[in-house]
Each structure stands twice: as structure tokens, then as C-alpha cells.
Length: 255
Image 1 (tube, rainbow, N blue to C red):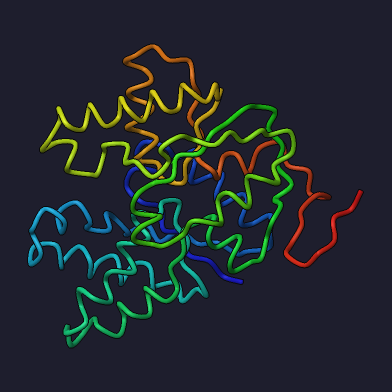
Image 2 (cartoon, rainbow, N blue to C red):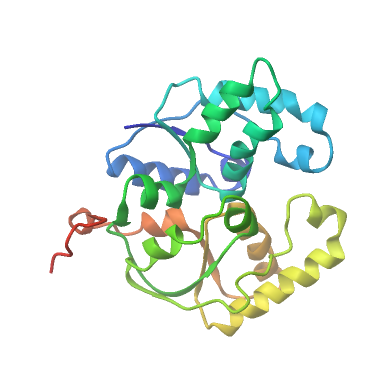
């Protein structure tokens, strides 16, 4: 199976270790990966700021780049950015040149954990992490991409990992892309509420499937001197892997 890697800006520039972990997991599971080097931003920040016409050039570039390898699927480490790729089909539905390409891109695009669980049918990547953790459910992945199950199903099978429910899990972390720039005081209050909820769980590690949320919450941890580690789900699922434990749906558990 051929998979094109949609790297995303935040992962590419700030969390390259997350991209590496994602690729290692995918290749371990038998995927042949490729990384188009001319991909840039998905265009979400400018489009959501109202620059619809100006953003189209960015959307066109991303479509041409990600479809250039003729892969079976396109996989990215951020629910928010993948949701934007799927939105292309609506934004460009009347575009004579790119409407069909945008729909093809949308049909092929998956967030990393969503791809593992729903497409490959993986329930256990063979990972191990001895820690108490909680999971931040990002707004865009949940509400726009509609994925609520895959991350939890995969984390439940990480050996030695104790997952603790996060109070008010539905609440936004306050980042919201350009929202945190336009409304910094409100954003600060929102991330403080999120941090307080995380602290209340006693977790040593905060896990999420969106690096932008981890950037925002991790930054607040640092400013408040909170000793809580942030980890992207790809890093967790690539940690201390025992390949003999890799398991798929409908496959019996070995003892």
C-alpha cells in the first residue's frame, strides 16, 4: 500500500520527531511512504481569516503536490489539517480545473490514528509506555473530521500505559489557529482552564493527535512551570515497539 505523507506546517517546522514517528509506524505496518517536497501549508489559517480568493493558490499547490505521487492514501499527523484537505472538495466544487482533483484528495486523506484504526484495521501497534496519561481531544478532529474513536482505541492497547479521563474533554484549548493571535486574553483563559483540567488528572503525560494543540498547551505548561510531558499520539504508538504484539481487528489476542 502506497501512502503519501502530508507533513503539515507545525509538524514540519516545530515537531519533526512526530513526522518521523508517524512514518516509522506506517512503514512497520507495511506501508510504502513518500514525502512530496513542494507541499507547504494547507491554507487553513488564511482561508479561515477570510482570504478565500488569496488562499486558492495555496490550495492548488497542495493538491498538485499531494496527488503527484499517485498513492493509495494521504496520511497526516493532524486532524485539523486533514479536515481542511477534505474541505477542499466543498471550497473548489465549482472550479473547472480543480474540482475533481479536490474530491480525489478528500477521498484519500486520513488523520494518522484514523488511518491506522479504520483503514489498516490496527488495534495494537506493539507500543509500550510506562506512564499515567490523559488525552486532549482537539476540536477540529472531533467536530470537523468527526473522529472520536480511533485515538482512544489505539491508546487503550499501549502496554503499561494508564489512561485517565480528562474532565471537560470537549473544551477547546484556546489555540484555534489565528484565534489565539486575534483574541490573546480569551485564548489564555481557555488554555489555563485546559491546563487546570489536565493537572487535576494527575497525569504525567498529555497526549493529543494535533501538534498545534500540543504546542499551545505545552507552551502554557512551560510558562506555569508544570512538569507534564507532551506527546503526539504517533510518538506514543512508536515507543518501545514489540512487533510480535502488533494486532489487527478480529485477530485474537495472544498470551
